[in-house]
Image (cartoon, rainbow, N blue to C red; front, side, top):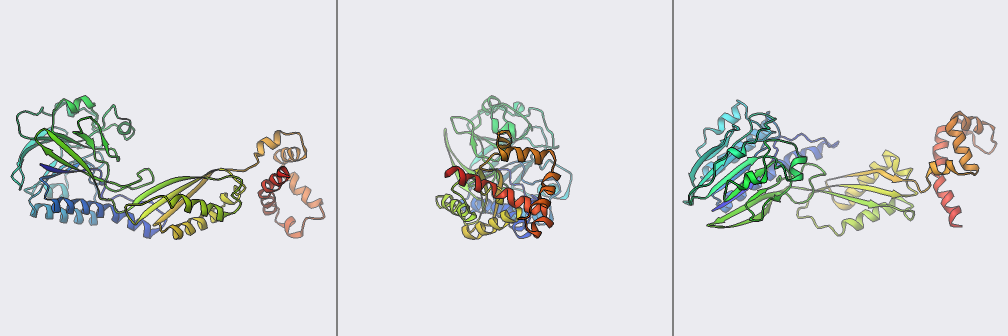
Length: 401
């Protein structure tokens, strides 16, 4: 018996990227990944598709998502492949046209209520098996429903599906307490396989490889990096084999870039990013990246300028062939610590303390100095920022000498 386990598709996700074209690609990537999974199921002639919750990102499904989903269900129905869909906390059952429509299919089996149900089916390949599941009918189902699932009996293969938080699994707990259970609750049912949804990371929970999260099929932000997909489950008597199958349309990537005193130009930063990315092999051509710059650098003041960061993002995006790049610089610090200077007993420390106590002091000082240009005196704030920006370089130069 061969089953495809997928979960957490989140059709209808609203993306917040500042570029309209990127938002459109991200939105389409979710549906494209789902389409890939269904086409895989049809091509492989699997005995069933297990969808373990959060198929939709919300109860109000956008028009394009509803139409695309139903077209794929029509294809599975025509291929006579059973689909078992359990609702999750993002897509709890509501009395609406879409959910009611699913009840009309012969091979689509929705589980809407937080009460265990078991059905027995025969696949088009002649395999007889049982499926037990319980869905969410609200956003906060906090009862342990799993303990009420039936225990496997007899020789007929038995599969469970649940969108659940497993208390002993940190990644599951961090994702929110919805239909909570324990690992022992799941093991006690003796199922040939228990397909779980809720966390967006592929995770096998037991040594026998029979209980696991498939993760989501398409990453949606920087915490969901790397390849995403589903799990092909092959059950042959007492033996089982599970295989990861990638379905993602694009990959998310995140990396830290350490800076130091040798990085004296933005070009040095670009070179470091390119060097890091030269070792990364993407399984898919499209990718989105975020670079976290960190460390003490003479570029500190430049990298606090949003226009510099924007230009850097655009340059890196083009150089590396990414769909989109975001660069964070809040972890970059100046080479010279201003607070340490203020605590030191020298002229510069005294000046900084005086300036912090009375900001107008610097303005009055500029008016009395002959070597300051008229432009500097007329735009004192710009002159001050430029002076402080060059402070690191001057001091480091003196220290090296």
